[in-house]
Amino acid sequence: YLAETYEHQGYPFLLGKDVLERASIEQWLRNEEHAFDPPSRALFCHIAFPFHDEDDDNNEDINREKRKLEEVLEVYEQRLGESNYLAGNKFTLADLVHLPGTHHVITSDKFAYLYDTRKNVQKWWNRISARDSWQQVLRDMRTMEEEHKKEEHDRQQQQQQWQTEQLPQFGFRDIHISHQQQEGTKSQTVLVAPPSTGTIITSIPPAPQDDGNTSEPKPSSPIQRNQGGFF
Image (cartoon, rainbow, N blue to C red; front, top):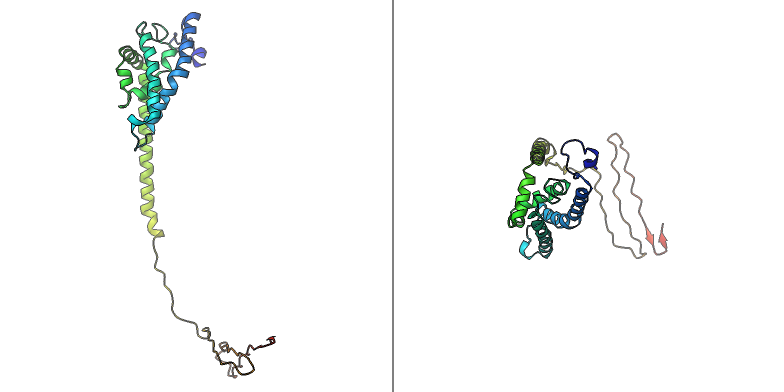
């Protein structure tokens, strides 16, 4: 869409100069989408999100994706022995779409040999990756990565500073427990041997009296349990 919309701005040959070149470019675009991109993307994900306890040599999934990419690169090796670029001798959209995926694979220590061991593919990559527009993309990527790292570093520092300032306010506090007991609040239970009638009397202590009241404390009412029930 962008290449068609801005066809007369910037680089003029992204879609070719005639119908025949356009058809060749479309063919390579389909090849990139269905043959090159899936294994290349799988290897990139493995680079970006590796399993620390994983052995690449014995990983069947990774080995399968490497074989797929090698088959594609063998086709490229043959084609690039006939022309400088995939769709002819001019840089086109067919080459451009390979830049992101190839960059992450070829700059890794694990999979760079897939390109380095193929002379024509390596020359092709050196040509397309040296273009000023792609070099500007890489500079922008590095700038964004540095900004992200700086933001992450600042965020961690702010979090540590907040913890240093705030945690003492929420630290452990001494809890004082008073062992004093309020007078008159301690309950007592007196067990009396049951009389012959089978009545059990439980004494409940009197409630605390005011200092100004000199009246005699009223005896507590007994709770009686007769054989017939509660009264």
